Image (tube, rainbow over all chains, first blue to last red; front, side, top):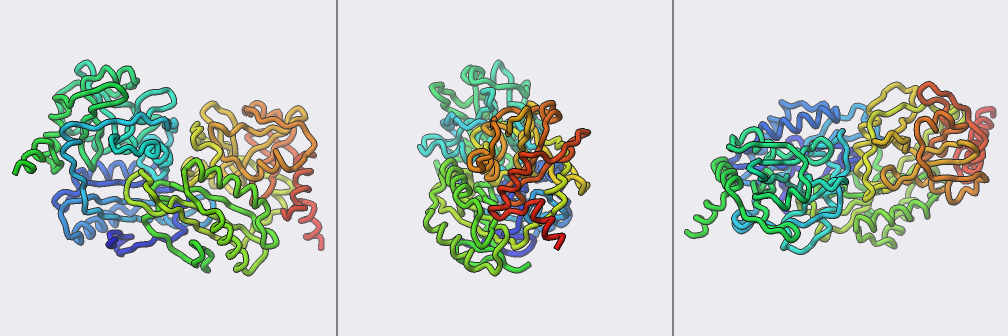
Length: 284
Length: 284
């Protein structure tokens, strides 16, 4: 594999073993879509990262981090891809007490963005994960490095017919996918679950709720499996692949609806693939 | 810092950045007390590690791991210390799907064991942590790398008068310390909390319950703060420092009791310090 990783400004393949990201998952990450050598949702990613660093009390020098990102985006040879940023508390001695560790920024660039017209156009099948999300309001919403729930959930299926798995909490409420957020349209309202107890507050979710200017009533509300089965549209979203319509969950089938398509169309103007655009490309 | 770390058989200071232990906390660890160049609770540590690897579906070659440990214990220059073993799922591509990663063993040896006669003899003061432990039966009991709850809890105090913090769950039940397990003596019964929903099933806890042959009625049971305040003895334990009597929690004061002292005495025969032994050493 070519070297695609930087720590601070240095190309690196390895990390000090003393890093607390390894020892305790004591860190955060952002997985950012790069389009034309820019981060599409730059401000939203950094806002979330700053909130997380504040909660964990990481003393990050934000101007240094911005310079590093600028340097890396200049260095890469392509214009499209994924930039993953891990910020850990840095190296420390054994023990949970963070003392005065200096945060470490680890940057990885992946030039590939999987493009899959069928998933964007026809939709995906959701696997019903058995692994539940625990309620932990002190960590909910954050994209931290403690992701064993997602690892366990993703291990539940190997059949490639399932693109994503749906995770519920211990009340049985539908919360999110293993790597994406959940939206439904139900009674002419766009609904996404509340994430105060568990789940990752995704950047695409944030964009849809507060920046997309989509013309529909919105609600942050509990989604039971019963509500899910009565939805007129379901989609999963994240800042890498955009929006996937859900075509099947358990025995229920769905069709990509008007809101899903409108949002995909808006995203296409920002640099994401849209089903239409991909169709055109394939027709050529 | 001198190099004290091995990956497989190689002395290393660094770890591949692709390791899933960093990315997702996708791994487990054991912190093992070394006495006379042997792990005191060898079998119990490996039993817990095997259970964890089974839950996470790590395909560990146990005979290789045993040979590595033997090699390292031969290499170290001292007879006493702490051997920390981290087993991660190994390196993988981006995404929660573990694919077919090969587990990686990271060994760190720390020659120091903090010896503190006052804590063993007089006891410690417990800080009442606000950070609660989430209920997650899929991960409860395991010593995995997702330890942000403990990091948050340990950040709550800096005053060195507190040696350890007590963590409760969201029902308000007392579960464990940030780095130790909780036992109390109440109505002539030795009680420790159930860990099916949260908490780490410590090796010292396991030894006390099933191997110490201490002569007292035992119970695995909910411990409320009310029960705690009515306890005749409280102690915290882990496999590094042994057993610390608790002398204060909130406004309640306690004295080290008979059961605490009996267990400390038994541990002294295995290589742990006992208050008596340390006193003798200091008198010399």
